[in-house]
Image (cartoon, rainbow, N blue to C red; front, side, top):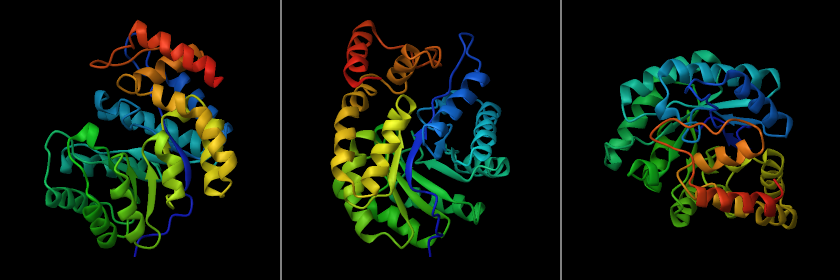
Length: 299
């Protein structure tokens, strides 16, 4: 039976990683951003995911960022779901074990990218990881647009049934039919999170449990409130917030994320607009569009 994780519900922020001009991690800025999230009502923090540019960071850097997140989160009564996935099964196992030692509350593990494994390969990959960190909660991360492979509903459900510590999935496939199949047939206690801001409200209407958000980096209070209202069944209030935030949700993906989000956050004086190659700052045309969205949304 899937392990019951009561705290895994609501809005989780996929944290950006602030860099200095020389490419180093800005520790003070990162700690400030984490505290801003928690003070705004976000209780789930996701460091070192796609939005955190984890694939351009060394293992030591990722561990450092996760440790900083854990330190602040546990002091302020929040939880950490740390990104530990890669396209190398043994490396993912090794890193997930190290992250467990930091005190992170769970691991977010993306489907292997570039390799393009079959469904049986995906099942074998996540099986080995689950068996290697028994008792440690795992959230699957399905994002075909980034990985070139889709964790099917059947494979997700098979993993959920087979391993009690595979407790959730972050679904960013955009495939509502697939998501509904998971929601309808999932075992008791298995959680489903939207991996895209714009689909959070309809996902929750279909009985999903929350959102892993990019938009909440910019507007944590409003995004977390939208998710909470939806989970409470206050649909009128949730819809109002959804439609207010929707232009920003969509604008965050005008170019490769997190470049647009970092531009918006730099306009808010929250960080410097520095990314690691191969990501680059957004174009002049996108800057103009984003400034218009910022004004309209009321960031």
